[in-house]
Length: 248
Ligand SMILES: C[S@@+](CC[C@H](N)C(=O)[O-])C[C@H]1O[C@@H](n2cnc3c(N)ncnc32)[C@H](O)[C@@H]1O
Image 1 (tube, helix red, strand yellow):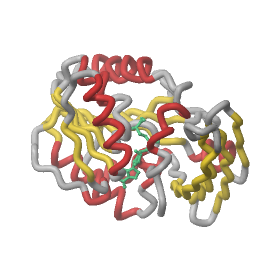
Image 2: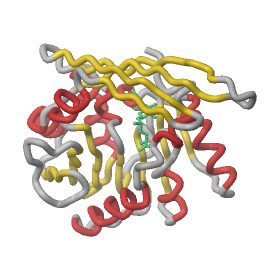
Image 3: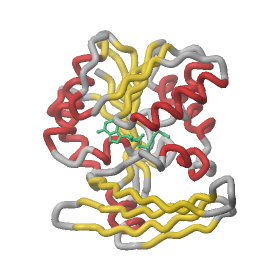
């Protein structure tokens, strides 16, 4: 599947409405609430480093993993411009291969786990995370909720026409497999003012809160909190982003 290749170079511009500073503060509030001591973090599906870079600036020792060569290159370039060195690895988190153990925290932000569409992929990843964490280590991640993928995004078309980038985003939700196929067509203005078109197809799985909790329990986690939409409230039927916080 063609994912996060050319899209990598316009990802940050299209995500400019996402408040990553607020995201970082929320992660730090979670760490405080759980009374955890966190210095080192392994970030899964770190993308262009939108959390990796500010967390590094805040003095966390962080390593990022992503499957996309291009997303990691954008992260590297951004870090270089800020005079920061990042530890970045290109890997499929379904086959996570990391050998530094006793980690304080494993993080995965903004839908990374929705991209694991098979049970055994998410099972392998959660088990490996459990193995890598120190006792009392924190596993913090969010997913797009079943409601968001099935009802808000599912079987809907979105389009935006900006000055230099336009896109069409068509989604098809399969409620037998709980999979959403997203067909994205981008039009990006080049230096001569002409628009180049490219397409990507993304697939995500819509997980229920219960499914994720069961995968976590099977991996060994017992202390599991679920919060909705950057709050500390329990999710409602129409919550769009579910944050899972687990202590080993
Ligand atoms: C929506 S982006 C989020 C990126 C970043 N965490 C952020 O908050 O901006 C999802 C990321 O998941 C990565 N990804 C998808 N499937 C993956 C896999 N199997 N292994 C590792 N990374 C994956 C993509 O390459 C992409 O960078």
